[in-house]
Length: 296
Image (cartoon, rainbow, N blue to C red; front, side):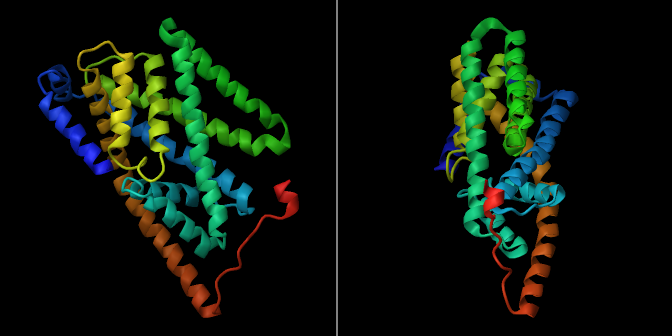
């Protein structure tokens, strides 16, 4: 289904080439700064996602995975999750079971929790964009900063500190996603205001959170295109939205292809060593669980 939607999106761009002539002309002279912003925000999202996964996994299993290792897992999983059925997420569950002895259910809870957190953040920023409406950039930025400040307040209580930091990381990532869409539309020769960029960031997160098909191509492109057509009074808004999201996906591949490939190679070495250690000892690592004190 995802591949079919992606193929139709490509067909839409090709058949509406005349309507989006200005965008194609702008792409022939791309702004290097806009390209750098797209790639830089994608790269910055990796450690933010790793922080969220690290916090939730520690909460569900009591195991602390180093940030560098978790960042490599996020990079590898992000690359694999561009295929259907979230193979990166399934691979990460298996990796944690073999290397860290974490029960698959507990790893799955952390992964699902991170997606629910991202979907919740996307819904909030989307609703905020609708409420702010045409009031302008200052209002949009003020609402985003106010939410960021509100998410940090629970961190004053030790029991809520981990959840607060995870929510802050998701919210900052949404801000980076909004900036990414501003840069992508700029590459197409279109200025995007803060309200629309926040709405597109929320739409992208919600579409990416749809089980099994969200991470792959197709669904997100059409969701962003549809939202663009609802917010931008342009005759080619749908085509521009689809093109912008495809640019973001191309940028993601440019970042994750080398980084995710290197991470896969690095993690496979760790995985092989863990399997060899288990073979020599003749047993799998004991599953680690959270004690009652940690749960509370």
